[in-house]
Length: 399
Image 1 (tube, rainbow, N blue to C red):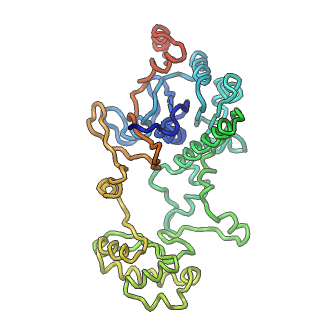
Image 2 (cartoon, rainbow, N blue to C red):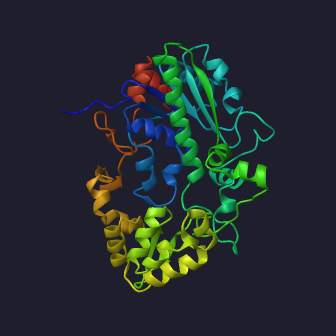
Image 3 (cartoon, one colour):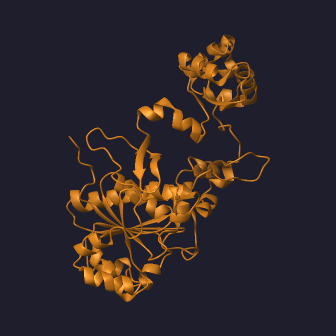
């Protein structure tokens, strides 16, 4: 029996491009929300042409826009704006990531739209938020990562700051946006208030929220956390170690009981009773010493043997995977984190599975990223536009 997705019945209008807003709506669409994605006529979302393109479409597109309905609409025109207002009367949530003030300039800002739909929830994602001295500055995820504190602490101390290998700032903002939308829906529908509202998500704040104890540490002690490479400051032992076959393993032996098991596993049982290593704070003072001992041991064994020995000892350890490793790993495969889909013009295409796993209302990929304007007739028909009207709008370049 096919189980119903948890967000079935929720209607979302996406007015966004690239990563942040589309990532938020992707999460909602994977769990059953009807997401209507508005794209510019002719060009569509730029991500359709980002990174590796095959048969005229980016492979990223099929992941980022799965389960969404694509319609084309020129938001800069009065007729296009009127269509948005008709769509808004029928949706629960609007998620957008234009620069602050853009929708207001087009007469489709929250104050205008809530007059049409007082229950409307609008999630606004931008570089610096809807208020403050930086509100009008353009902001990408990379800038959010830089100003939110992440880039400063990423990399090695003797080298310039580096980036994480993905659009982390955008995706973090998107996750907050999706979570916030569901919180607002709970307040509106479950609590029965019937009240819509605006949610303001700033990219730099989404990143900043992950900065652990950095604020109180600086406030009380003047501590500025610096780049430390693969070391976890103040936590020991926890590092990346080279194995005899040239591969790397990450070992987390920082719990007291785990540290004891690790010392047994690497043949240094006398160290588990050494007063210098009796607590994490003491081990942190001797981090380099411990890392050398552990590293000397891993260099004598292949990665596979290191993982086997530490697994048997109950010590957290794992290899550093490339995407090639991930695609072949039995854990990923068993939990359906690699799924195959048929794509017209491509044949079989593997895409990542859905996170998280629900026992009763799991998420599902119903279709991959759609063709540009694929759902025009369906969506516009639902708001009363007949085929002749749709044809005229297309001829005028509005859709």
